[in-house]
Structures are given as C-alpha cells and as structure tokens.
Length: 119
Image (tube, rainbow, N blue to C red; front, side):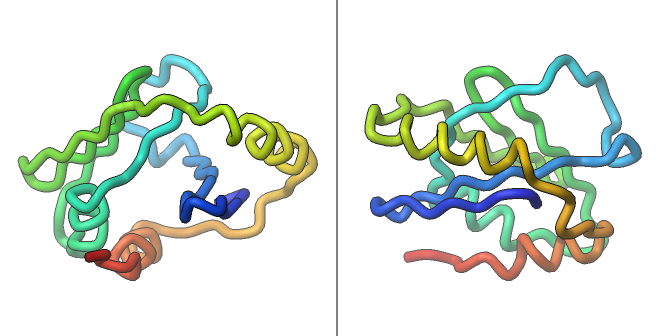
C-alpha cells in the first residue's frame, strides 16, 4: 500500500499495487476510480478466510469482490468537486513515494479481516 489520505467526510484514499504474480487474468490498463465501499463490501472484505478463493475485479464503473461464489459489487460514485484538490495533492505525493510495505497472501487477508465491521 503506497498512500493513504483521510478526508473530513470520513473518506479514505488508498493506493494498492499488486505484483505481477498476484494477477491471474487480463490486465488492461492502469487507472483510478472513485468507489464508496459501503457496509456489504466492508463486511465481505473483513470476512475473508485463509482457505477461500478471492477474486477482485476493478472496472471502469465498478469494483467487484467474489469470495467463494458470493459477489459484492460497488458502483462508481460521482467525485465531489471538493475532493479534486485533495486528490491532486495525493498524486504529487505518490509520484515521489517508494514501496513501504509488501504483503503476502496471509498478511493481505489479515489486513482485510482487521477492517472495522462498521455499523
């Protein structure tokens, strides 16, 4: 994970880079999207078990998570104008960043499971 930025509305900007061996499928292009992870996605991420097959798909209009045949989809949301300045600052920061953490499969699952369950 490279960058993390908190917004006053309790939003979080995070960047995750996956190494080539983590990908099993077609890689079309780099990109950025604005997706609001609601309770179903947070619950699905925090419920991942060590022995489960997980597939994360990131498209132009949605992010999908499939865990053992159960799929959760979050749709792209409009980007609030006030975020543009903050996201521009993040891009400047990230252009100068270096790898700070590398996680294996188990560590990644532990990270997702440690996410707060929410309300």
